Figure (cartoon, rainbow, N blue to C red):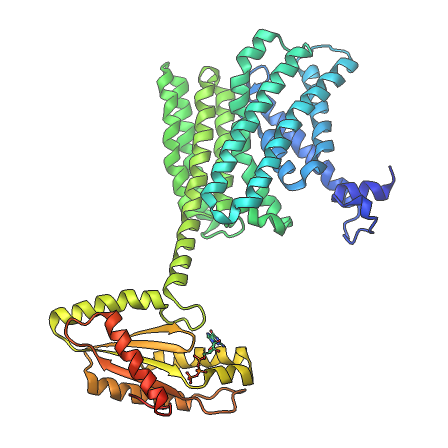
Length: 492
Ligand SMILES: Nc1nc2c(ncn2[C@@H]2O[C@H](COP(=O)(O)OP(=O)(O)OP(=O)(O)O)[C@@H](O)[C@H]2O)c(=O)[nH]1
């Protein structure tokens, strides 16, 4: 394989096109990155083996999280590295457990294990990529649910195929395969749930195009002092250590369930720190749990701790989604309440607010008036000076008028170049005065490109007792029409 072809492959380029790579990344850099991935994967695998509580069953299996993230970000380009990692780890296992299998047998087992591991995580990642591609903009909870469900199914597939392949290749007995698939699954799931988002978050610094996969979670912002975060981490670690020491001291298996209470400090971190710090905190919690189980010999309760890691991680992701959803909600509310061009009330919001105000005025028998005005010859402004100039006229007219209003006045855009004002506690005479003042104000507005003087026509009415907004709008609209017919630039 030529160096150029290899570089194409690593960059995932369409080799059929024959284009020269525009990417400045050299082959050496790409090889370095792939080697780095291999070393990290093997390092995580070694950590997992240290935490084994039964042969081939670890409290959590962090390489699963890295494989899932690598397939998600790099696609099939991650396959060679992860296959090599799987084969090397099989030789390593043989060496650690002194199984003395021949190298051909080990190579075969490694290839089979690699196939089971990579096929499962590639499949899960490919499905999640499709899911993310189709639906991330529709909602973070949908993306989180997709990740949790696919993470669970993928790690189940990896556990079932992995144990069967180890049994078929003679590395474990059939009976053992039947007993370790569950801890294998939950261990893989814990590694996937905790580490995949962390790795994707880290990679999003380098590859900004995958930031949208995080569904609005900001992995870069840190919203509080680092010392505060370290304090919270230390508190979580101390509480966890206390619970683990108690579990090892008292001979009641129920004590180990206390680890689920750690969801409280974890959620505190999720609610008060950035998404990145929350992911770090989950990783620290998981690794510390695994270390304590291994060092205190809490193997009998290992499944409880594995489930605790999975449940706390899943809850944390939904917790992370809450502020993002609230921010989106506020944005949608702003969009629904405000007219996007002028920033004043939207038609619907004006109707809602004005309806309430009118009911209140009728109840207390206070006068209330309605103005409707329209910029004169606005179509001509658009045609002669351009649509952008027309937009500027609308924005400037709205902002100049808004500045002169009382806090209790309601000001909204009726549509196009028409605006409406509801004036509580204002009778007809004062409504006409106000409209006259605004008409003069429009005439004073200066816009660079606009070579003609701005003017507007106004309809003004005071609402009759028990008159509804719809009836009032009909009346004021016909008054505006009369003002137009009478020659424009006037109040009627
Ligand atoms: N620039 C801009 N133009 C808009 C917007 N909304 C509507 N328009 C245009 O505003 C124009 C409104 O013109 P008309 O209501 O027909 O009346 P006019 O030219 O103001 O004439 P008179 O009201 O009779 O004086 C139409 O050409 C619309 O296309 C907008 O948001 N921005």
